Length: 202
Figure 1 (cartoon, helix red, strand yellow):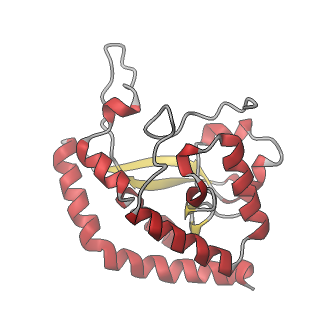
Figure 2: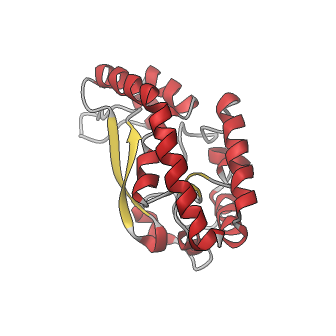
């Protein structure tokens, strides 16, 4: 019953209430980033969701669009702003995704939506992560986030798909709240986000 419709109903109700409660934080953050970025405070990007269906994800823009002399974007660590670091550390950049949950593109809990270009790189086992809606947080996020390997991250994602339940979702949400107050694993060992997935064995 939970997988059939209960999860979606709870996602909609909780995310709508959460967005209304967090709206003051959303508004203040948007204004600060608007000033700091000297422009759009929001970041929109195509991401694959349930069954690989592509949707637009909403996030706060924590990095500038600064490029080098050849028009190539500078490394993430050089484009991440001071305010952006704080917004990422407190996971405030995820608040706009509550709207993605309301719209039905995402769930509160599920595998994180990755880049569209990765779709063709997945093997049959890794592709199972798209058998459920992607989430704002997930089993991989509370078990290492960006500090673990891609191999381990996909193992955790697929495990969640196979064993998802109301109790497991509550556990993940609780652990996520703890991580907001004790932030770690935001960056990988070599990047402020996560190295790109190449599909090659690790």
